[in-house]
Length: 125
Image 1 (cartoon, rainbow, N blue to C red):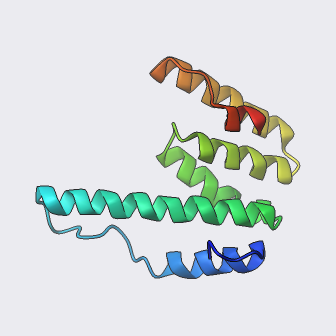
Image 2: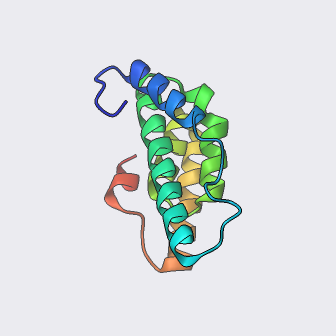
């Protein structure tokens, strides 16, 4: 999917890859090594989700992604890439005020929790 030049094809390939992922890995195991592996795998899954959102947004699938991106952003409230994707999804659905609200909330959250401003990528969105 990451090698595809066609965003529609890439989005479909990412969807297929994510559909093969049944849930949290090694859910019944609890050792330091397994917990570390689980964390790495969950980060890779999030990376695939974010890549999927990027290509699907480029393909114009804003409305189809809005609920998924909202859910992911709620689970990862400090992720600026997700906030930018959520802004683009709102904007693509004709919800400019919601997109601006996401930015203002993210800027406030970053300032309150980390004492930083949004990075250049999010400011550009």
